Length: 464
Image 1 (cartoon, rainbow, N blue to C red):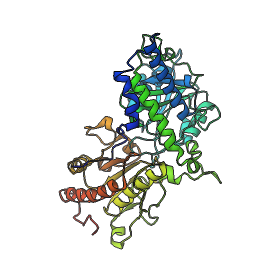
Image 2: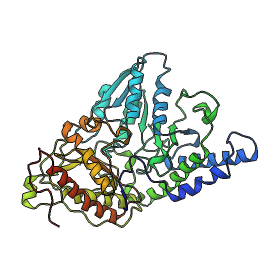
Image 3: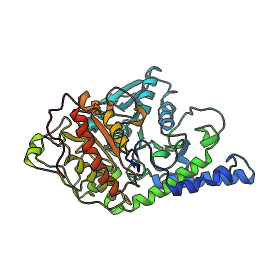
């Protein structure tokens, strides 16, 4: 059975170019980058080159790049490294829709007498700048807000939020694991993200292997290490360098920069998304919102205020449509076209389903859809048996029986949150795979609804 992979937010495939770049550092160039002999210095040069590649992607200084074991360590280092050793009682602000790496770290800090405020989400999955402004206190030391949500793909107004935090004298961290490589980010002193002090990225979300990550630490930030040992990473993260992994994430960053440049003319300024609309500003639609075919304006609203295909639309024959996309995702715009084709194809074939986070800016590869009257876990298994890999939400919570904390924070009922599926495409996704998925998904939904006592036995498929 040929499998179709639509779970890139859990992990991306390893690009062949990345594998070829890292392979020699397993069998040939295996020197320790801290050794002074020739083999060690060859490894050191490779690490330095990778640091340059990542700094070029993020538009920052090479000295501001700290290599870690992944996104979870980077998030923990950002929070504990700035808060755990404060002399006076400190206050942390984060959100109710963060990844568990942030939420669990925040809960641990609460036990260490750090005050924590969790900002609420709007029904569209956004954090309002006014909510942050109201939550700030004189002792607020750090604000941490995810850049793009791993379940819904919703992009936060990070530049605006960071500016608010800085104006109050607080540091600002963003978990950008789902944004790096999908959005152009400018961390330079005059860039759109100049007020971001710490930023997390993970290798296996940008087509590098698992086990390697980065924490961007602006040079003005004093960071206490969590790990103690050698003086690696400018004494910010002890431990022998994972040279092969570092080479891989460097190559992945280089490829991501080239991929993003394919639509630079239409996406300039995306990293400066804020909560307002500026006349004459660049259009973000093809990149962040995928706005190639807007949802039907006559549709009623779901729990999150987003239109969806209900029984009235079904009876009237009204159907959303999307243009045929290119065959592969060779640019962010093309990836958004593939995502739109999947979304609109599902909305036109399955009734009583809808998009979580519709109406908000979203990264170009991600959609979260609810399918009323079924359980997401059952649909994930049914699609898996047909060769389609998708997720019920965060991979770090697979097997959890509770509904998604992200979706419930957005106001979805527990039943609808448990009926939600995440489809996350990769650069390797093809148009043929989208079309094949569109033959599998409606059939699986229909069969599961036939087994559901809550389903009102209305036909769930449009005739081909």
